[in-house]
Length: 220
Ligand SMILES: Nc1ncnc2c1ncn2[C@@H]1O[C@H](COP(=O)(O)OP(=O)(O)OP(=O)(O)O)[C@@H](O)[C@H]1O
Ligand SMILES: [Mg+2]
Image (cartoon, rainbow, N blue to C red; front, side, top):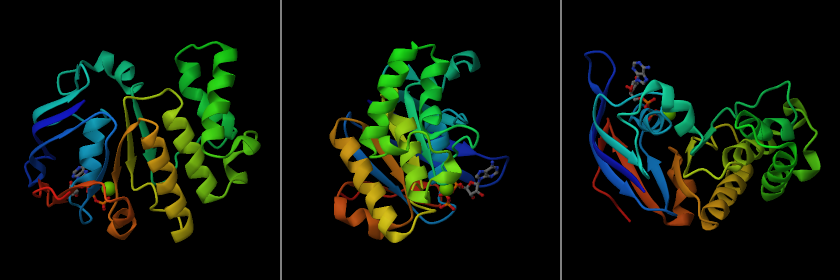
C-alpha cells in the first residue's frame, strides 16, 4: 500500500533531513511517527503528500510512484491523500461545512453528493450541529475535528497527520486520537507524527521512530 524505499532528503549541502529511510505500511494500518524536534517527521510527511520530492529513493503509494510523478499530476494524486495539520488550516471565510466541501467542489461533484458526503464527514466527527459555524466560532478541538472531516471526506488512500494534537489541551488531544483511531478502524490507513509519545502508548500501535533523520529499528 505504501512503500518507502531508501528515501533521503537533503536541504542544500548540509546534513540530510532524512537518510536512507525504508519502511512499508499495509492497507488499514495505524502508525505513529515519533522523534525529537528536527528528527525529520514533517519532512517525511511532506514527501508523502507531495509537497516535496525525495533527493533519493522511491515512494510507492498504491499504484503511484510519488518520486517520479510529474508536476502536472500532483493535484490529481493529492486527492488520494488526506492531511491534518497542527494549526488546522481552515479557511476563515468559509463555514465548517464549506471547508469540508471544498475538496469535493474542486473535483466537480454534484451539489447533492457534496451535501451528502460533507454531512456524513461532519457527522463522523460529531459536528453536524455546527456545520454553519465559521472557524472563529469553533473551539480548537472542534476546529481540528473539522479538519479531520475535511481530510477524510474524499475517502483518501492514506490519512496523514502532522502533530495533530500540538495545539490542543490534554483532554482534546485524547479525544482527537480516539477519533483518528476510530477512523482507522473503519479502514483508513493512518500515519500520525507526534513527539507526545505518552499519548500513543494507549494504542500500542506500530511506531516508526526517527533519530536525526535515521529510522530506528522498529518496535511493535
Ligand atoms: N525547508 C527547509 N529548508 C532547510 N532545512 C529544512 C527545511 N525543512 C526542514 N529542514 C531541516 O530538516 C530537519 C528536519 O526537520 P523537520 O521539520 O522534518 O523535523 P520534525 O521532526 O518535524 O520536527 P518538529 O517536531 O519540531 O516538528 C531539521 O534539521 C530542519 O532544520
Ligand atoms: Mg514537524
